Length: 342
Image 1 (tube, rainbow, N blue to C red):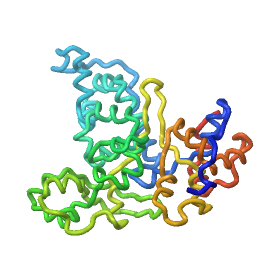
Image 2: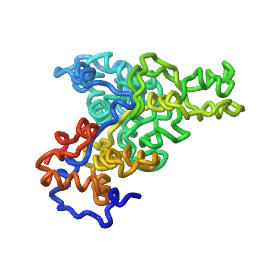
Image 3: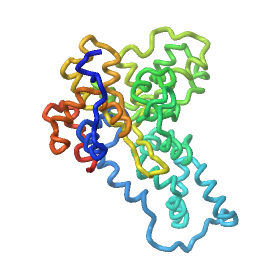
Image 4: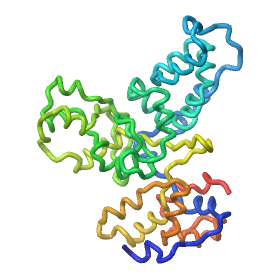
């Protein structure tokens, strides 16, 4: 490992500089690699789904009115997302009671991208409100234990960027390609849980544009259903790799105790180390993984203590009073300069 990448001793910083350091050395750049939506797409619906009409309801719950309210609330939290929205439209009383659920309010406030993705792909039929809220409150990757900034829709599991790319549990492929790879019969194909992808741009460096909706399913599930070994190597080409990203969406972590959210933060220092060819010049996989690793605020500060290029960026910022000049274009585009306050 290059001596210009990892410092010999941990960098010491003042406690009052924590937020300024995070603002200076972090950036966000995941939205265009997985399922994502522009903010304008959310503008028209976010107000409607996050508020109840400010008037009293003269209509009750019908037959459900005979059940204690606590039990009605319990039932609602275990309904699937699609049904929650359908019931919410029945009358003002249901709209108000669903709006009063903390789980619903947190989901529509912090998980709007995943909510839209689950509704548009049809996954919402299989996910309860409690499932969604529980995943939002889960911090780490369900495979490796690192901070997980993404969700694999078919497995409904948190994952980090590395596992999304490589973990067998997350690996996706088009339904037609899975049929060929495992020689699946029609009956076996019907057993696969699948959904049609959404148009967009996927992958990381080499963005792949997909304008068609393609049915995708889990490679691992296909392997379990079939008794045949795959007839070709899966996941080697960008054509195959893109399906993992087409089946995933970013999701922040919601801390129930503090009621704060954490998005995945990337290190501008690691991005700079790649740009300067300090690391990655021999095509080392670990270098790309370092560049793509996402952190919580505390995790980023721990990493900062040893990341020499991040320390250089901080030193050149005059203690966070200006943007470092050496920020790469990628880091500059996703800069957290205006996201993290003093």
